[in-house]
Image (cartoon, rainbow, N blue to C red):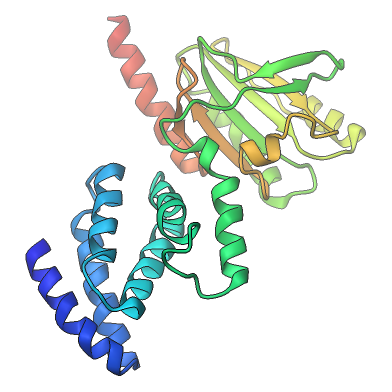
Length: 268
């Protein structure tokens, strides 16, 4: 498939340099869509390598730019967890040094911001340890190694946060392995935070609930965990490795069921 695509790109590149119309864009984008679909089940490293192959397969600078931008947009907005690592790779290798230009300075700034707020919590990375305060004002460091951890960054003024907070206890009740749930309050209203804590009840002996916040943002958790908006959900392994990032309730539930099955088999 690589050879066929390389030939097509070479043929299309010459025409693309002469005439940039919607037909050319459509043909090129269709080819890129088919190719990325074909490697969808490959590893992130393979997707990085294949992206480099596509970008370097043509000599025309306009075609190169279009391919690089298409791939960046595709992986940045991908619904597949973990594929944003490819977008950050493309930014670091091709766009940041200026080898390939982005469409505008605004998009360049946005790409830099996206990489800054996401690179430390990519799948397989070790979750950043940040210093927070518990409700009594005592400092704690989260997440703690030695146990599975769920980090829930929320704000009491966030509608989606409220919905997820209502559903979360039912999800946590299903856990049959040792875990800690860190409810990280991102707001500033102490009274609202207290009201949230009083109403958030989980009666599962396997799960320890830890409420914390960092009102002065001294830990830089917003950048480290990419909390540009709330809610944000992360799941880490017992050694702190990130197994799930920017999760939805449904995907968190799937991870929990998977770990429950794995833990149950290990206990036999």
